[in-house]
Length: 294
Image (cartoon, rainbow, N blue to C red; front, side):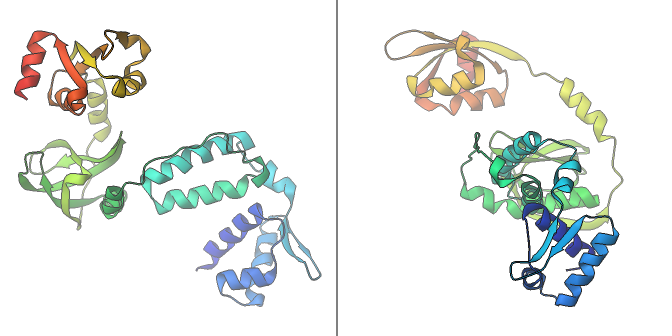
């Protein structure tokens, strides 16, 4: 560990704990007592208010006033950020997110962490399988390096792609890579679970005006169709969460009648098909026929 990194780590530890002994620091960083003493002198010269306590239970601490006065956010703000990040960590599984969480934890008093909100996500096995793909994509975006991979579409057709990676996106339950495909010469979105044999190339690229593409994408609204569907009680809560209670009305002892808006494309069809026999479209007739054929 380099000196600068060690100094930052010392500050973060002192922000979280009251007193830390020299022995704890030497064991943690695998350095000599003399090195720790020099580190403390360096921090003091940098106007970090570190103090020392002699004796058996002695060690180093940092002034409480510094812990609070140097914050740009209140303790409540930090707790809210920490809550959101704790849930996000389970989706991202990123080392960077983990480090950020530990830094914020060091700035928040353990007594103030009441845990009034807890976020929980399924620890799906598939997420761990795409972790390396996620990391490679993120690294290539930061370094502006091309990526090449085999892409398998929903019909099982495999094509080789070379892409300028611009953004990772998490939508509902899946990760996507957005970039400019050099084979199709257009912006495309790739589902990470369909990417195989991913490699980050040595060749770099000059970024295109991706912000304009994002604006065009944001302004695009797919054609929505109002449909009526009979749904079973077992999926009622899912429709309430997505469309609100006003979208559902009583129909019979076995079904509710849901009136919702869905895209007139394969995405809308796939969404409805995911409910299986728990859903039956009744109107409009043209949509029913299209859905059946799909």
